[in-house]
Length: 98
Image 1 (cartoon, rainbow, N blue to C red):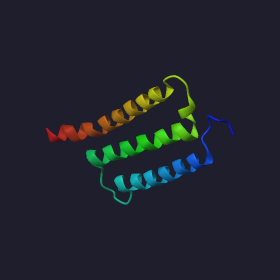
Image 2 (cartoon, rainbow, N blue to C red):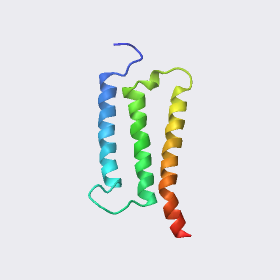
Image 3 (cartoon, rainbow, N blue to C red):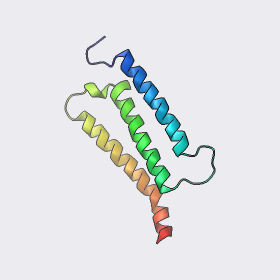
């Protein structure tokens, strides 16, 4: 195995972490409910999504071995994307609150 590739143990730990985060997604997303999520629960979903995407980028796409500022760039892009989605979700809630 190449020195910069994740070990089998790291991949298994990443998989277990993503399964736990998937359960968190199901709980925060109220998968059995038909009601709309509030901003708080949507924020929790965005945080879990960010963490899951980081695991995929770091371990399964092996971005942790990338040179330069690729990690920072991908994390920043992911953060901006998820904050934008959260903002678009929150706009109607903010409009009705005022």
